[in-house]
Image (cartoon, rainbow, N blue to C red; front, side):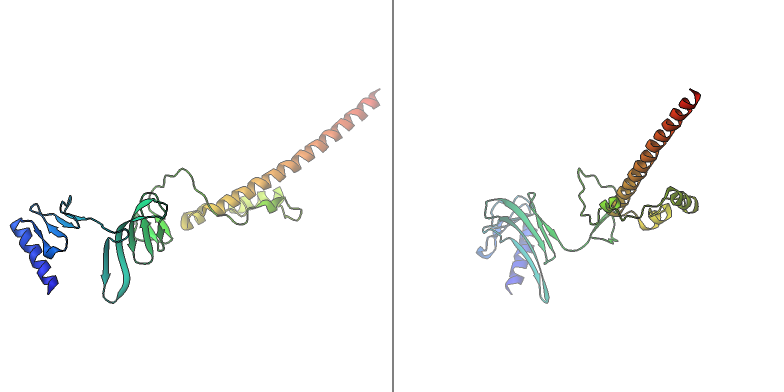
Length: 221
């Protein structure tokens, strides 16, 4: 019955553009169609003045365990922030404080297939990935380094480097940045080993050439 009374007052005040404090509850309707809760001078269509920290707007539903909350809050160290909670899975804090989002988020798309799916550009100053299995093992004594002949054969048959996804694979499956970074580093390390091997062969050839030159010079004399 009281809810019906409040609704009636709301309709009457919006119709008559008068100002009224509903039943002394601190709910005020102004002549310019603004609703104030806890304030006599609402600045917008709905203005709620929070009188107690962490107690603002709450939305519940019978039979639904989830709760929506919106209020101003403060940490023990005095840092203040706005708080918006959508059930137990989403908690957003303003003023640069940490937020929590349990579900998946799609930006530019409603078809989110990961924790974050973006259909568009991403502009950032830094991207940090957790990487497991960085390929330092390439430099271990037991690493099976393919010969350049094997690499050449694979390129001729497949059209791309061994252990590197093809253009068709990337086109259909996308690019896993962390895995590709590991693959590229492995190839760089393999190239380094090839260069070291070629350098050693080159140095050996120089010694052999110099030995032949010395022998030829001795024979001529």
